[in-house]
Image 1: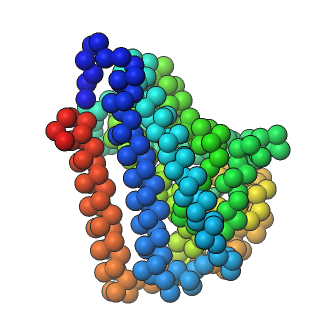
Image 2: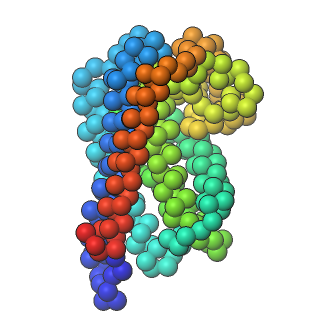
Length: 299
Ligand SMILES: [Zn+2]
Ligand SMILES: [Zn+2]
């Protein structure tokens, strides 16, 4: 909704508040919820690939969900700040249609930038002067669950959320207007990878770490090991920063080989997967449609 010229800052913030909270909360609930349902529906498949013998307790789930709500509010405030900065012409991104190849290129760049940001921010939060106040809360989840994805202390949520406005500020200063659709894909990709990293079950097929062209993508075991031994595996999407900096867990590949199983697709499995993917897709499209309708003032 384009604000009237005399709209005050408070009114602008109010305009964006509901949308931002709704978008940030629904991404978390859809991704973590979809993973929970997936692990429940394919229970035998999941149990066979479980990384830890320990299970998360009821109080872990409660802590994770409650602190994730706080994270969503902090993410919402950051989203609002980004949108307000855009209205003031400080941050630029375009909602115009751009060629799909450009969207793919911009998506790749932002994922690479976020991977580097995450690795160094994450290592900094592990510094003994910062750990207790920022990152300890996330590490209370020794046995991660899909709901651990947003389980952050407030200060960690702020540093996690800061990436997007900082990245857009940089690209805007370079005179570059990012495509809104590339940002939208990035945010969905980020939450799905985040939930996969905390699934507690190795989702990647056996042989992944032994293939040169796949091994650079982090598996679930990669981040699960970080929750058991915080000294290793600080990376998020890719393994290269940990390898360059010598922080990869020495038994990473060995542990992965123990957890991962070949992914044999039976017709029953394929059918259930297709139904689940279709349901997730329909939910995402309806959500997107609703947001567009609200934005254009139809709803
Ligand atoms: Zn984690
Ligand atoms: Zn950590």
